[in-house]
Image 1: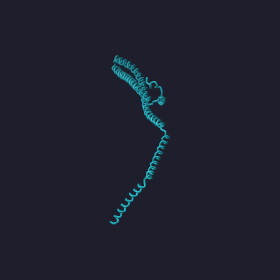
Image 2: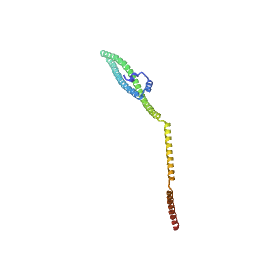
Image 3: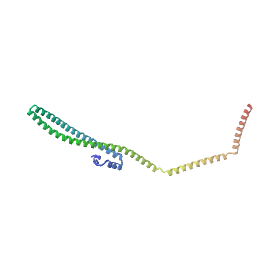
Image 4: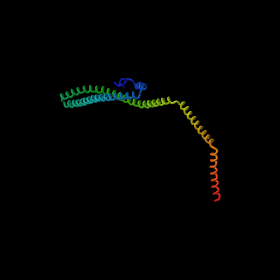
Length: 223
C-alpha cells in the first residue's frame, strides 16, 4: 500500500504539515506525487469501467423503450384491423418490454449516479495532484534557498573578521617598516660617499652647465 493510500483520509493541509517536518521535504513530496499519480491512474480505470456499465444499461433501457413504443403502435394497428390475436400478442410483448425497460432504467439511474460520484472524486484527485505539484515547486525553491543560506552561514562562521582585520593591520605595519628602512638605507648610502666622489659629481654637473651655456650662446649669435 502506497504512502498516499495510507494517508488518503488526511487533508492536504495535514500532508503538507508532515512534509514541512521532513528532513528532505522535496523527496517526500516527490513520493507523494508518485503515489497520487498511481491512485489517479487506478481511479481513471475505475471511472472508465463504471461509465461503460452506465452506457450499457442506458443502451438496454433505450432499446426496450423503443420496443415498447413499437409494440404499442402495433397493438393499435391490430385493434384497428380487428385482429384480436395479433393485438393481444403485441400488448403482451409490450408489457414484457415495459417491465424490462423499467428494470434497465433503474439500473441505468443507479450506475449513472455511481459514475457521476466517481467523476467528482476523480476531478478532486486531479485538483489535489495539481496542488501538490505546485506545492513541490514552492518547496524546491524554499529548500534550495535554505540550503544556500546554510552553506553561507557555515562559511561565515569559519571566517573571523577580527583576525582578518588584525592580519591586514600587521601587513600594513610591515610594509611601512620596510619603506622606512629603504628610505633610511638611501640616506645612509648618500652620506657614505667619499670626498672624491662628491667632487667628481660636482665636475659632472659643471660640464653639463658649460655645454648648456655654450649651446644657448650659439643661438644668440644666429639671432
